[in-house]
Length: 262
Image 1 (tube, helix red, strand yellow):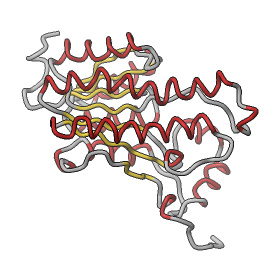
Image 2 (image 1 turned 90 degrees about the vertical axis):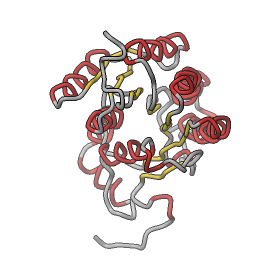
Image 3 (image 1 turned 45 degrees about the horizontal axis):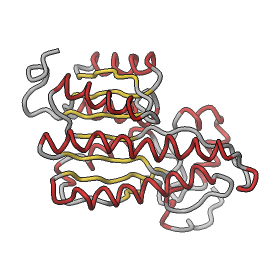
């Protein structure tokens, strides 16, 4: 691929990890609609290809790079492929997550299950930024959004690995934001509440209804709503925001909603 002629000179180049489904896929499509060339990263190459076909059919640009964010060499290769293909990197949404355990009291959590949550959901964000940041600095600046959760702000019983990793993402985001605030790279996080992704869809309508009733807005969120917030945080409209964590949670973190009989 011709690196400089592949995209217009004013187009942005974005990496999205965990882009094969759910919030990652929705955000990749949103970046493409905004005019960015999008590099899709995840382990499932077939699922990535499906997302890329959707983007291409809508007139966008997408490159599939199968990636394991838990492996440093794989992440380094992702960024190198991006720069080789498009000549630069401007935006990254570090969304990939995985590992962990089902709800389990802490003393009963297997050590390997706890380690797996941190390896993907936290260490994977560290590795992503480690290789993305030099490419952004070379391009003159950029914007990164890391995926946390409302569980990164308040704890959830039984989810020691997930809660630790998502709290860690927020701390890592703040630290990195301070490191690069004076070099035109902004780094923020998002903290979604219940979102209608594959897992909640598979749980069934009653689980979705109960999750929605627990939110002050009395519904769950949509992947596209998270995607819109991520695209905005990476845009010039958010140019004075760095080191922040944006809740996308229907009011969950604001406090207890009034009792309702609905």
